[in-house]
Image 1 (spheres, rainbow, N blue to C red):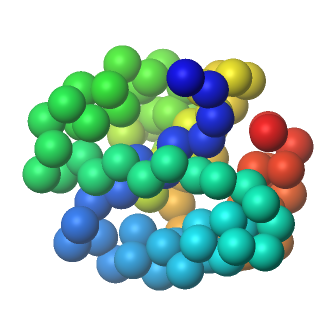
Image 2 (cartoon, one colour):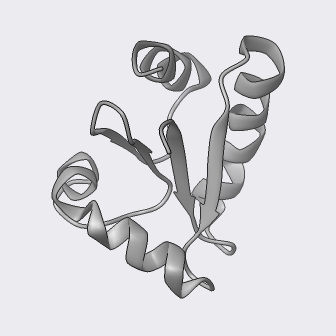
Length: 94
């Protein structure tokens, strides 16, 4: 599988803030980001940890959510960010 994954936590306020932006990317820019909840889904958490060497540096050294990972380019982005920054990163990493 290739594409962009958003690892998120159900109770995470930063993740909740990013959800409408991720949906807007899909609806307005045709950029699909697969959402995977990691706090209540062990398989998703294990998958996120398998990319720790790429995601953690983007999150300041530790795994954090929301964490965005591109399975094709092995690029990561982390945290609550602006729509413009997410769109620019996602478009560059399609």
